Image 1 (cartoon, helix red, strand yellow):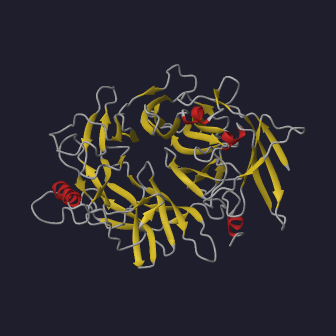
Image 2 (image 1 turned 60 degrees about the horizontal axis):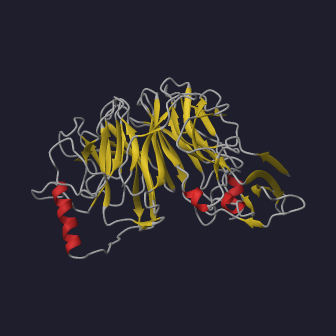
Image 3 (image 1 turned 120 degrees about the vertical axis):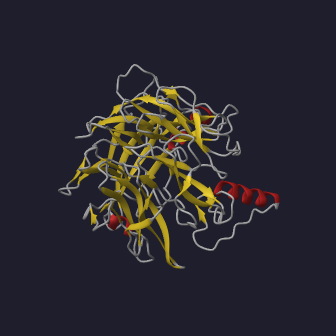
Length: 512
């Protein structure tokens, strides 16, 4: 079975040509979407080529939040080292992480100029001010919707600040200097894992810090002294009142039993308690409801040699109490959670049949509603303050990530917003096909066909089977882009074989 989709809706003869690698690498790459507190504009992280064309540099852009807005996208930051992690304070000021040099809010803290710091851009514009930096730099930041509380994540060498008269900052800086002067680059690993994707873990440990509400009022306050490897690759969030941090926390029940529980940390005194924990499960991507009553997160079952783990959304009271599964019987893998402003439901995405639609689940009834019906793959969900709209990044196999506005009620007809990435004139078109495995199970694929292909002039075929392997060919790929081959006259088949997501747990288990 096949279905010809024709030309994608966002492309055309007037789009950016897509005929060689030089043009391809020049395409702006939009990501990291964040909606301002008043819903009037979006901050986006945009990657573009550096002046020497040897690397990509990220910057923060201001995008209009309404289709048809006459305001053009505007670049807000310009440092050569780039900026990332945009977050808003309630007053509309924008925080971000950058290695840029410049002025700080308080007295000079003597921090190294090449370390990433937290910066604040005033809501009304003007010069950005450096708010905080630590000897190892700032990795990420989170803000609270209802207060000026700011949370930092930063790497600190083991033992720093554990005793003596030196402050944590001084102690960590001294340990780093001693390590550098001794020429030590080795890492002592006393637990697993030792590496994540393309980088080693350690020797520094990630810690969480509370930043004083008043700019420049004092150094960041350590909330997690001596965490070991507990915060490696974990996500965290702040409750709207700024009093509680919710984070994944790696825990070893035995040397071979590693899992991530969901922990709540009191910002006032650093006291930590466990919200969710279960043997054989991890808890990831927590989000606190706008009314501060609930925490939603993804519960991931760990894989075994006999069967693949499943995923669902768990709901728990922030104050502690019985949790419940929000998606019993929902045979897809949820991700990218975002609360509705009235705290009555949770939006999420999940791979489904070569797409990644947006869903909504009601807390009261448990009803799951799919609110997008197009071919898009959605990420970065941002509900508007009044609940009417949902902002997101939408991509597909034939379109790069593009900011859109959806009607929150039904998600129909996503309206594209102005952004730095221009429509592309792709060198071909996309067709959806389906075949049957030996046991009759349908296997669907996307087929990229070059313009030159026809019945009388067939194109040579390249087969690309995705890695992962629990993933799906359902969105634009900057790393494995089939349109570069189409520009050279090749057809590219992108199948979702057994172990692919979007077809149910049994389809994943076929390969076990």
